Image (tube, rainbow, N blue to C red):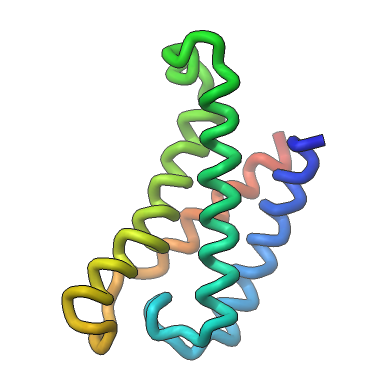
Length: 119
């Protein structure tokens, strides 16, 4: 089932955050080795796709505002999209990725998805 697949991807993402934290020499995604970039983009794309499918499944789209987990996941996906795609593009176009910075360790926010494993 799709739900079990998503929970499995969440667990993989938690493991990947650990690997990324310990082994990634880059301070930002665009300065990281290609493997780290590709994996981050794959996770971001999967979670955005999963959230979009859940949104489309609502008969009345407004009902999504009544679902706590949908809103929670939406905020997490929005922060992941912001960190992975938007900020990478901004830094890439602003200074060719040469400066450090970013929005800090936003991957900690993604660990909040682990709450889904317990519920």
